Image (cartoon, rainbow, N blue to C red):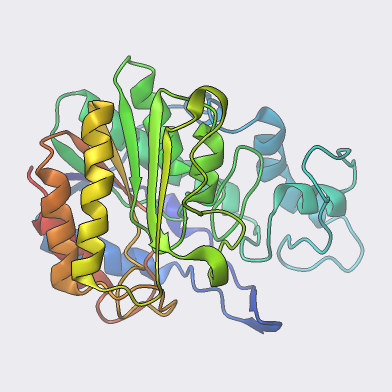
Length: 339
């Protein structure tokens, strides 16, 4: 299996994270790359650098206003007196339809949903090349490959069209899906991250040409809290083309695989030509977020079940945080994919 990654994805090194009023180290550490890279190599992946597809495929998902913000805000932030080392919002609009401010402080609150997505000097470069890795994967699948993997870091599925959040800046899975969709193929996005793919859902919520499905820990008491309920089924033309399958905390392999059957049936009836898998490994029983309880062997069974649909699979890395089992979980999943 071919895998895609660019070394510039190392450059984003966030320091700030706050949960329950306590400031701590950001879990989305660059070290994730080493662990995931080794796991992919152990599974037999052959890495290559993506080409630069330019900003066009990214702006098919994210607005020029938002991309301008991501590219320029760090340097603008430094002009403020006593500015911090990272761009972190302290105020937010009630709605994103409220007035758009001119100030750096106001724009950071408009475009950053929470404090888990601090922007540093090299965040734009890392996020840009993370998206290019997803595009390289999409092009690889379009060329006829049955499967491929993109080591996308920073991840993407919490990024809305104009909003960063939850460690995410550009929605890599959505960008890959849109790139594939523009060739006329029907695309389903299957998000198996422990957290609901709220950004992905929002981007496609009123569309009927991309099916979005998310299996995740119940958001009633788990990030991202405000999205991910079973009744959220899409709107307008997209009504019925979004499926959320929330599960109780600590759900284990057998129950998860039963829920996955429902998701795969929807993908089959949608007639998807390609499945973009938003591959979050933080559903692991060993992940520090402790949302679900999937075992290392369970990840292989998940991959085998998806492979049974016999559709090309574009595997886009999402979450999965530092634990001794992280690389093993990726290797296990990739071992279950038919190449």
